[in-house]
Image: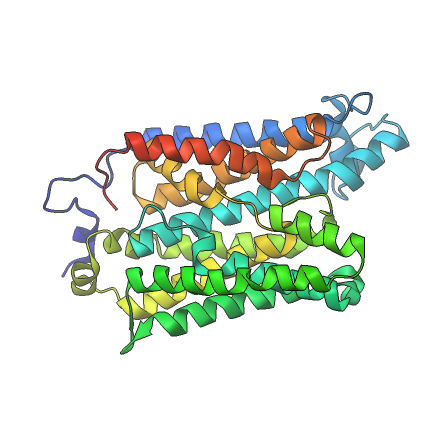
Length: 364
């Protein structure tokens, strides 16, 4: 069969590519501009009396880059430079990267499992990472590797949880979407039951505080080290999911049709699940559990550009980054650094309820 026909609309008449090319480009361009503005405002804004002029932010950033130092005239104070470069910029970038990872993972899992309620955390990643971080705090292993021990253990535990879910869901060499989601719920419930035990074993109050903030999700500890940790996962997600966008589109026709059109179903499932788990594990291990981003953002992006994954994936990543940057700015500036997971839940839960109420028939 000629591969060129695989991008035609399905026989039912549902056009998978209803959004015009110009609309896709316009949506992506608007999202990029909005994200850039949100990043600059996030870096410039602070609690009362600790603001930096918006016009100074790009100059300070350019002055720190080797290739641009001689091309800009940076008249900012040392205090403003420290606030922008050492404190606010890495936190804003970490928020953007985590939001992008959750957006990518949400689109990939919803498209693969053909379930609008699929979420990066339903596969057991959040529960595994939470148990790993809690164990690292209780055992003091979080202090290893220059303070990155907790992140490393949370990452490994998250991948272990996904591996367990996949093993339970695999029957006769096949993994069905329904069985996988059910196994994810079972494993997550089992792992979450271990959290109270680990918190009881935590003898120091600061251990309990760190575990609590991790369970809600926060970016207070974000720094350049964590930014460089997240960046490769965003790059890998962008590259591989773009390469797999055609197969994700074919999966919307059903597994049997996709198999006839050349998709190796079980191999493809393993690849997407592994990449989604890696992306989510990286995000959760750094920021803790930030809910609803990977659940709501794919729906919003799908309403703008339609279900074509070639346009849907990058837009969802941009919208996820924008949502988390704005949410973190709100909690840092106006809410006394409240955990950002509280804001995403407040924004995401009603929005998702509205989507469920108003959802029309869409192609998956």
